[in-house]
Length: 304
Image (tube, rainbow, N blue to C red):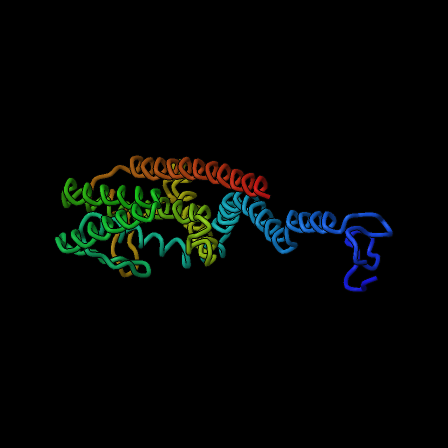
């Protein structure tokens, strides 16, 4: 009898024969079955990895359900409170407001530098700026297309068309009105875009670096601040900040009504319409984000 090894089936000491004297199994067949079973069983760490992926997809789906509605609700509550409104205006919506002025100026071909409470804008268009912005947007569209990021490519191409339209089709007077309007308009549009970064792809630096949560908070605060003002102004014109801004001249509503002849009703209506359009767009992105997350979760479950 040999003591080198044991029977794969019953564990009895192995003998120098083709089969086991205790259980009668043929050693070669038993070893083949054991090897096949080991290959068919996935490693424990792989199963854990699949379980982790499924958990991540489930968490992402839940975040997409509650993130934007909760952020907008919290921002609205802050706007309706005195101290909360001060912090929202100072640390969020003011910066997005000034960025809105600057972005509109750049799209129209004017140099602008967003700063706290005031954005200086050049008196005339800069051909060099027009070329730089157009080249940057075109390059972004090209690189995105080459990287098969078609959504980003379409976004860059759309902004490029918008920039060319604002530069070539708008005269100086119309461009100035757009730049002024784009302060609060920027809070609505840029705020919506910032909130939409919640749906960034897993490979995006915005999502991997947790930037999307900061963008969500800033976007929700900016949007809620401005939309609440103009929605309330439909029935109370006293809410509109007419008059002088300390150190920077007339306020945006005063410039549009006093210097460019907008009526107060038209001013309110245009901001409200823009805000509603942004809400509709955000709702569409919200539904798409839930659908996408649900499909991704179903795909991960099927793979498991």
